[in-house]
Length: 460
Ligand SMILES: Cc1cc2nc3c(=O)[nH]c(=O)nc-3n(C[C@H](O)[C@H](O)[C@H](O)COP(=O)(O)OP(=O)(O)OC[C@H]3O[C@@H](n4cnc5c(N)ncnc54)[C@H](O)[C@@H]3O)c2cc1C
Image (cartoon, rainbow, N blue to C red; front, top):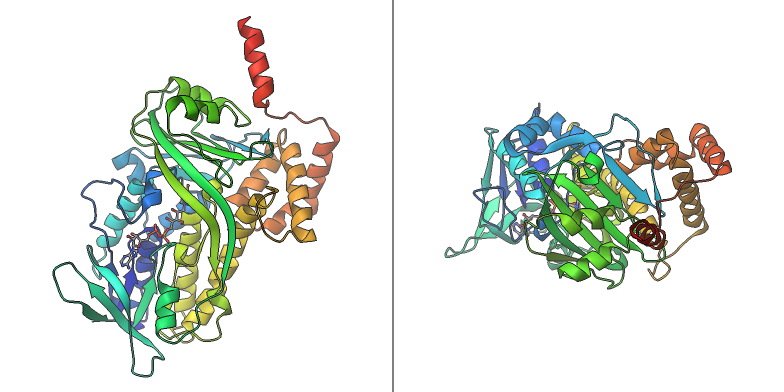
């Protein structure tokens, strides 16, 4: 492939930064990844990625793209670290709108492993490329530019105990995550910062890991519960390496899960199914409780900026992060990596404008899914145009019909997995199944009250 320059820098060695570096390695002679944290010797959580202690799973699309960039990646995670692959539509229970989607075999193959394992394998694969190097314990403090500040020429780095240094590059990519400083750095250089779109949801996820027994959850690999009235509490339990479950739960606007056994179990009992509760009630805990506060869905509209310096990009969560209940963030990073590859193929001219446009199209879909779902909560503030209300109504009907129709459930999960566009759910074939499914009575997940009554009845 034609080289576009001598040196590219990626700031941040999270999933996004590693994927961006993989793409850049085809177009630049040397690629340097600069990371503030120390790289851990084992695949353990680290300070710069606090979400790494919480439930992560790689959706089918993300898993396929990683395999494309690093052939054998999925099987390495499984063989070397005990990750699991599974059919997202058949091996995982999906509950939304208080109903359970019918399971059925599909071609949606996802990858389950903890976030440190997913990242560790990616980093090691990247480091095997001869023209990529990574420097840890290295904080980027700002950008270097040409005298008229039209183009970025490098970054200012700081390594403890050493003077600040400028490292030159032909392209700099900011992949420093949700807390990225790009907006501030741009302002320092006299550029307008991007407009922020924010939807406050005030969720905090409480997470703990447990020993997984083969009979748990009827042998399924996971369960995802997107909260609905009356409690609006989300819950996720996914299998991961070392025969363990990782369990996260949290509600909206400060409705936090407690970090004590009794309180956590009582909280789990308010989910629309007792399945997570029942596993947790009898499983051996393998970790402490830990909390992650997720204040808002946050999108920075770089694609709308009229002025932006040359040779600079922003990538991954640094552009957009949204409620992770559907687990889409890493898959978005993978899609952005493909978009970056497509943008670089014809050359680096006008790269920022072309990339931000492509990234915005990618982000639109998971943003609409996650934020659209959050806006069903009556106290979450945000505009609810007629179209959104129609879509939420239609998706509700789709859920009802999909309790018995696994083909329909898979159509929905293909959209969640970023395999198909949301418009596919409005096709005549899908709409017909939704209509037909709603003509029949629907089997809902037992509500906690119903479940409690059933248990009391059974024990008396
Ligand atoms: C609770 C929770 C659960 C989630 N679950 C899922 C899931 O199941 N599936 C999924 O696909 N996604 C999930 N996500 C989203 C996912 O974690 C992110 O979207 C994804 O990891 C991409 O992150 P990133 O690489 O852009 O940023 P990050 O992972 O935040 O990485 C940023 C990196 O930049 C480094 N850095 C920061 N500042 C500097 C600096 N100045 N100089 C040098 N380095 C710097 C940091 O140390 C870090 O290594 C979840 C998120 C949360 C919060």
